[in-house]
Length: 436
Ligand SMILES: C=C(O[C@@H]1C=C(C(=O)O)C=C[C@H]1O)C(=O)O
Image (tube, rainbow, N blue to C red; front, side, top):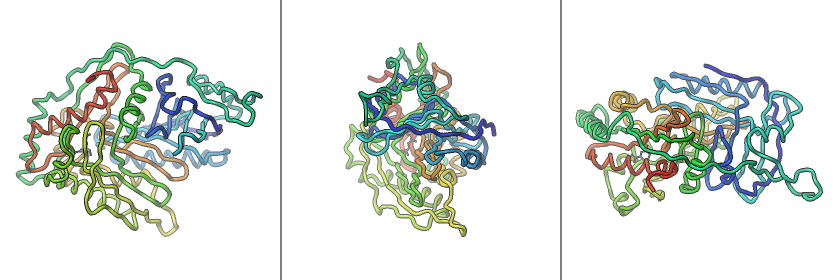
């Protein structure tokens, strides 16, 4: 594992966000983000970070986080400290799994009319707030002067928002034709009972003339898909509708999605389709089996509902439960819960191990962080880990590799699966100025 950390000192400032959280994005160069319906987190810069790989990547990142908290425990105000995490789908990926504590964290809680909090994580005492914010393109307006007496300072961006450069789509590692063959090979593996379900993805590359303005892309995603979680951690960004695990104290919850049709079709077709229900049931079962050992109770709905997004309908099950404490009363860490849940059959297959082997054989591109856990955890043990879907992996400032996949079960048709990947690529393509 590679890491950079020493004790962190945290200072906290309450602010108003006159432009809203998303309004700040186009002028900034965020290192991390997690936003839904105008609330959430934007991180700038890096105060501490670690990268990890292999089978114990979750444990390595959890150890780093625990030692960072222990080192910083004597410093003031570490309570609200938060870190962002992106873990690779596969233990064998060439990509790194990341934990990042941003230098500046802007947090807008549930109600966007409330004040927001800015957390500055610095290594030493005597941090000059305006200087740190200025380095990240932000300014506090109206703090400590008479005009604003009694009110909060306003946090505003200094520069103008960045426009999208000209972008174009280039072929990925797997052509459409090769994806059709991969799905056909997956169907053979289902027929010979190697697996019951297999999730196969393909990639396309978006190349741009100028550096991609990540803040602008995130704002476009957040505005077009407010019901999803818009994320950025390490090199992965997107807007996912799927929550792998959310932890609030001892409460754990998950939003399982599997079973998809286009919004241009009739939702009743999804509800009546046995094949889609089978796909969904396997995804729910894998989530329950994964986290059951860490919980004392778990509930899932008897029948899935329908989640309506601008581009697709999904079958959805919201699972809730309570984490089990060990003999000393300690709850499992959020990263351990995410590790136990990953990978569900929503993104891998059933049974997990042969499905993962087939994915490695049949897909051309290393998934990297795509379909892995992505989100944040805080010093109090709370966390949101989504599944990194409907997104892409930045290869450099001018290239983003997008991924989209779908579940294959007996009866699936390669052409329909290919069409599903097109619909799932649409949010990113549109946010990147394509597909309009
Ligand atoms: C694999 C993806 O999505 C997953 C697969 C789904 C399906 O097969 O119906 C639905 C939602 C996600 O769990 C993706 O978006 O790339």
